[in-house]
Image (cartoon, rainbow, N blue to C red; front, top):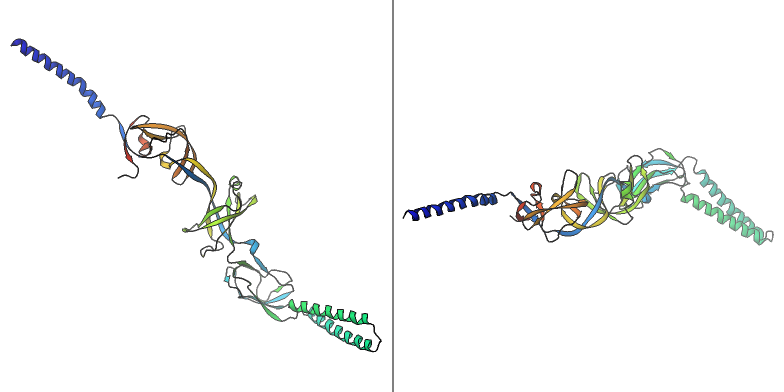
Length: 353
């Protein structure tokens, strides 16, 4: 009996010792550090390297019409103002020949009268065989030349009469360079008129960006103070020099007809420089260490796996990466800031609730 009791006590001691030895291991496993993270599949894609530029809407300089007169005129009235939109056929200016400008017209009239009289005289002499046919033909030519001169003077308004200049197309008055009562020399511009549907934008880009842009490329423009207003523009040309006032190269964009696009409007432009292809990940999935090395974490069967990468491009909320990423392993996109290499993961798929 005593031996049996002793044996039972020995077995109980062994069991208790075994339990004490196992308990710390189980506790250590239960308290191993882990992190709750969100993961997403790794995929390849494309990102556009975009330059952002600021500028203003302008009337197309190559399409702007300078309203001039081939003769000296006196301005009787200016019917428009700078910045005003006008319709085809609308009166812009009223003018008349400048004082003394009718002298040329009177001289042309006198030349026609004289040529007519001379022709009649020579025709009468020819009938009396006192003038030759060549003399009569010369008189006819002189009359024709005088009539042509009179017609040209009349077309130029040299007869001193008042006339109106009307808009030849729908447009925008970009500048008024005269006033009522002024006398304009022949050929001087009274005002500038730009077509309403020929607007451009001039934006400034960095010199290295200008070298990557070509005519015909598309760009997105939007109003600086109203980003909801946007349109597609086309690159026309880049200036061949740096603008000393801005330190940038002026880039000209052709704009589509839009009611909100008005000369003087401040706009921003997104200009695609290149298209990059490779690993595309959420931008917040990329971390950097103290040395500036970029890295991400992948879920390697429940363990955090650090992968060093190079960031090739950032676009919006996405980054383009180059590095030894394993396409079969999910990417940690949330909760990565507290991770260490090899840490246990508790995962949730991106987008799950």
